[in-house]
Length: 303
Ligand code: BEZ
Ligand code: FE
Image 1: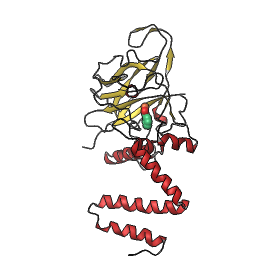
Image 2: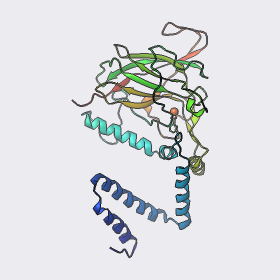
Image 3: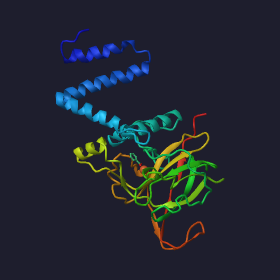
Image 4: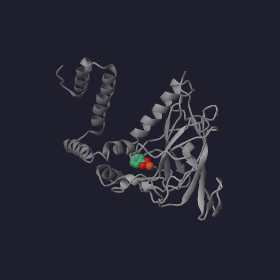
């Protein structure tokens, strides 16, 4: 088919997919072409704007290296990553038989809600014992974290793994410091009653990287680049759907306007302040400290 107008052009581009060997690839590309053509027509894209878009995407690619993934940052800041995370968790809920429908929010008493992984996960954090300080010497105010890992019926999950990471108390991750080793990271396992506890710092808000094309895009959109204070966790237990999530500091700046749309109300935790003294684990603390309590709930995999 040789198209003679805009409608026929879209039809022609879709027809070229008929030879696709993989049906899912065809489905995804069919939708992409349909939406892309509709977008160009809706905004009446001018040739100079099309070229600006090409140059922007080229710059996004050029900003990527083995440490920086500007395309994921683009996806994060447009809410695309979070959309994939939300749909994936709904799909897992449907697969494992937990009642759910697209658009229905999961509740805190149900499966712990997932959020974006972000760029600062570093595989191979040290295995530390329960109660360890995972951030010795890291800037920031001490915080005691505790809670349980259970399944969605409340049964404790012993030996569940919490793979934990955060920036320091000023919002800087170890990976952002040239030549620095791992800091504020650990893998901790729950005890026989599914309990966990450890010390780290109270995380601060911080900006996503803004020295590249995504930073320029955010500025052009009139958006701030900040994420509210949070600590990341991957929670894994045998026979259960793992969850990659954060705990957000209630009251943190930007809690209502996370640059990557990662905040979910069920993940916002009160950090309680305490004077120096005897901490809940019996430790004597000479500085004021914070405590945060949170129970994680994992869905059993379908039998
Ligand atoms: C973060 O959590 O650190 C993060 C997530 C998405 C983009 C940038 C940073
Ligand atoms: Fe983070």
